[in-house]
Image (cartoon, rainbow, N blue to C red; front, side, top):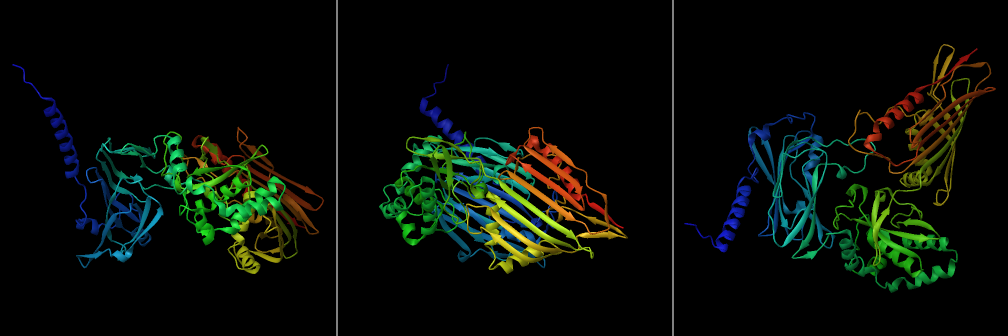
Length: 623
């Protein structure tokens, strides 16, 4: 006899099994807030990484789809004084959130609790739908164990299994919901202990170690980035076109740029005073910088639904300023588009993983006379055609009604320097002469930004001398400091002591002086991540040394020409003597801003040869 199973009973059975499975996950909680093991308090060092200043003992997250609530419990152990900074944390939360915390210390064998007070929790609104909480835990010191619990609506934007300190256990559980669809994008190079649609676990995750010349650790640290695709069938980030549409329809992006009549008088004045298109573009850029100052908040959306608000306040976030610039350029009849991007510290955008929440910045993109120009008006020292370092992050998304495409953000400008040293060796083995430096593009920008930190030229020169031991500046002239479209020139009359070594009647001089590279920045034999110099570089160094009467050159550094096979990096080092002058010509070029991990070994070898060459000296004999 066959048993008849009714469809509703079958559905009930499936539902029961699903709930049972989820309840099993819920019951296997690896950590409970406020239940600290005394052995963790007694632990002096982390067993698998004794150098660790702190460790994540457990990071547990659980999304309850019924309540649409996410609960995260975080437990941190502090081992060293340097690790106490982990007691001050920033966390993304929703508008409705609840945070509690306890710091535990072992005092004379007794566990002492210090509870987090409400006045030590600071919540700020970053964008319309994104909030951030800053937590300052009390009484954090060496040996402390910290417990923090967060409850908020929705899903986290990311879940990190790895941190800059070791992680003993990290677990994420997300219950399925018929009202919510999302995507988990996995990043990183470490493996998970378990990974399913419902549950992901990492055990004994090593601390993430940063390498020299590396883009943001956000690109390489082991984690999930979680992107909500739809809520109640309302699409958010299913495709990059959907992201485009969401931004265009946003009250704080597309709609905020409509009309902007407050810019009419500004545009009228610029049209009247500047007939050349490029000069008018530059003038509009400068006018925007002058009109609204940056509050140093990065955002892809404006701080209010009306750009006039920031314009009247004369201060705003990065989107306020650059969306005003875009609207001003439209009124001047430029072909201009907003380009949304993710800053370097925020991580790279992925062509195959559309994400609205990953975007945190917007710039202007102008097509003029067959040329392309990027503009950012947040910083006074940035000219048209250059972006601040934070924006140079491979690619961004052009946002327009008729276009939705990728835009290459790789700079065509370099960090370019030309240095001329005219030196004379005096009888007391002191070098005297002139150092002239000409800085172009990003080299000029770097100098101007650094110089801006000082209150006077005298204060700058004091710092300059302290960073170059043995150097005394007799006279200094800096040209084009405020002319950001011209190369910046430094000229110093100098006296240099303690850079000449003597042994009897033999004299040893390193011709690179203060430009010497003493060590290879690339220590590791292998590398998992690309090498990112941000922009290409081109450095030329000329050194002319006038010798005193009776001096004879005994030995010179050997000339060297070396380049990578594809020509993307090269060294040229030429030394010769003429009459009583030693002449050095040195050129080091990096034609690319990014070198892949496959190119690392050759790049490392090139730097190794560079360090060896920089260590060689001119040997002179006094007759």
